[in-house]
Amino acid sequence: MTTKLILETHDAFNFRTAVYSHGWCELRPFEFDQENWRLRYVFGGANPFSVVLSELPGGVEIEAPDGVTDAGTAARILREVRHILRLDEDFSGFYRLTKKQKRLEWIARMSAGRLLRSPTVFEDLVKTLATTNCSWALTRIMTTNLVEKLGREAPDGRRAFPTAAAMAGVSADFYRDEIRAGYRAPYFLELAERVASGQLDPEAWLVSDLPTKELKKEMKAVKGVGDYAAENLLKLVGRYDGLALDSWLRGQFYKKHNRETVCDDREIAAFYEKFGPWRGLAIWCDMTEKWH
DNA sequence: GCGTCCAGGTCTACC
DNA sequence: GGTAGACCTGGACGC
Image 1 (cartoon, rainbow, N blue to C red):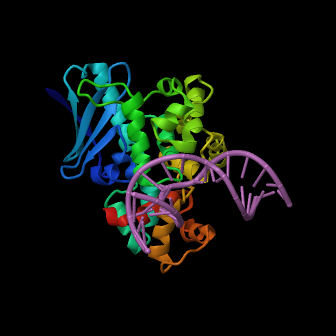
Image 2: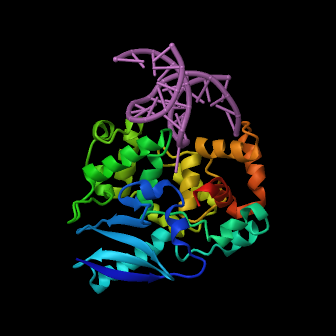
Image 3: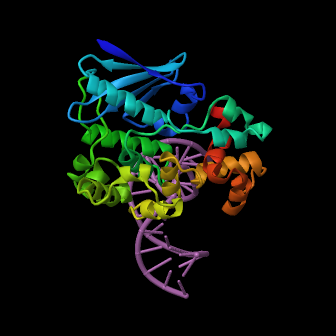
């Protein structure tokens, strides 16, 4: 049996462009049913449980298991779903800029730009590490292994994303052999140990007053996080002045704007310079237009 | 079946 | 500050 909660949304919100904004919807503990546009997520904690999100006119329906919908848990679910879907983020400045270009007019019309994220920055940080220097298929393997082998089980048999403490409790060999993390193994372990011990608090990045340049430096102090990973994380905490260029994004740019010819990153940066603090979101939406 | 290449990069050593 | 080389893995591709 399930209980249904309703999360009211607003005109500048589009469930579909938010859910299918980037690959995160395919990484556990998310599960995406594109045919029916339903997104499942397994929340962690002492008693993990999964919820299913779907669209309604003017809102999002959240199916949660009976027994987890006491007032406190219901409030937590609504708060975290707002966070995941970035319901409270204001994109009006971004839309004003993109509307000036006819080819980008669709972005405001479809209320695009909300990049799906995890309930915690820690989870997004681990997943971002799992995207570095590998195929998307391997990223999915690593995140699935992390959830299956270290995540706490919900009553429906699905598992939540592991806590930092759970991740700190295994060896580097475990990351190599069981997670298939390869050379990233010591990076995962070191990150988990620092977060579990309280030495590093990635959640603080969400509300940091640091200038983006300084915050990026702090992110890059995490082993395994370089320019791409830091700029991707910056996007996930709501700062879009970095492009987060990777081989996929570069390739898409060459195809769309450079007659399939390789060019320097500085040319790509110059192309999106006019979008100022929104340039990272501008390139992402521009390159993923066909998805929508 | 086997070898090679490369993907949603980063680190270290060296200059 | 810039660059070369090493680093794991799995899938695609050519033979």
